[in-house]
Length: 494
Image (cartoon, rainbow, N blue to C red; front, side, top):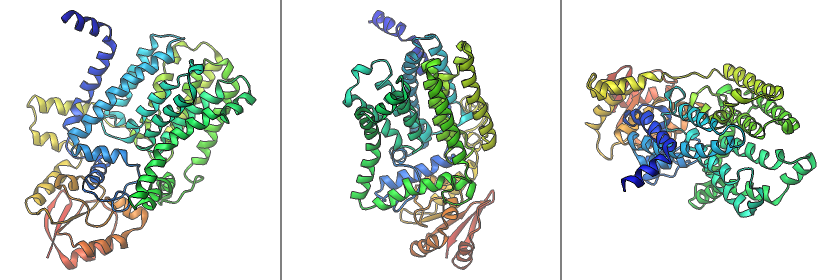
């Protein structure tokens, strides 16, 4: 038995190393408190889903449902991050298989470098790789889909295989809409770029295979619309996932959910991607086919990461799969044309990233605090307090849990939803969980109407929030301030 185990391990040393590396790098993330804004919204949406509250109709966030369902299943940070750990172990192993195929005809050993780059970029806190975000979750279906129709076995495809590959990729759409850009890049390469002439490219794009591939991709999202319509909240789901996401693309630059591709820069970036696509198509026969695929995919996925124009580092997780595949080409490209293509991409990505203003997070503090807590150099409370807002939120949560019954309701005015999750409550002010959704969508009157109906026992106002004069009047007339910590105020109803 030991010989068999030894032989099995020897044959899979790199895969075992990858698994151990991902587990070790992600281990500290499992033991963090409630503190990260997006995750806290996911938990509230997940609790609503678990308790039968209609998502989108009675509880709002703008993403498709799968990430909320995962949060509802997990229920706390440890299990949510554990799901992500398992997901990223699978993603890393699947990426390794993709990298092997990608480098098979050039420099097979560079598959190791590509995989190492991917694991580090997708894991380290610098780019929020330790956080459960849709950008990480949506790439596994796309990677598997590409492997299913990998260029090289075209004769063995068939309609069924294309349809299944599209279907698998389509599940990524149920995590976040920008994944459509990754799918488009792969589809364009498979059907247009590998043909010898423009006429044959057009014919391939109009073929049954392309239609079935696209239909498979659209099917999961289409079925989700059918599901929500059958449940009676289809219009709310449609408005949120499509209409509102269209406005979300421009909301950072316009401060409103109004679609404006010119003010948001979407039109300019789209033209640049179109130009890159055309340029790559024209010189595709003179480039390494894998470099062409990698650059095309990178251009589209980077465009997807820039859809909203927001500078959050986890948005950059979307292009990390093609980026990890392309980067090793700097060691092996010998053609001037290949260096020009790489240079154009580097200049565009660098200038655009600087324009958007992406920021990065520190990596070492997360590991340092975890090691100190694990070795007893700091107390558990000191460890929790090292995370942004955690000391305040847990103090308020403890105060409320000691004074609230199961039926008592809570409303929080602020951008941090962690207190809802520490107290296991849902917002009593209607479907909008955080203040910036209320402000951006101009739903102040709606919230006041919901508060008049629910009459929550406690209202918490966090510091540095947007103004809400009507809420201030309600607090003056019907509530008394009972607790304050780090600028956050807790009000009790008379």
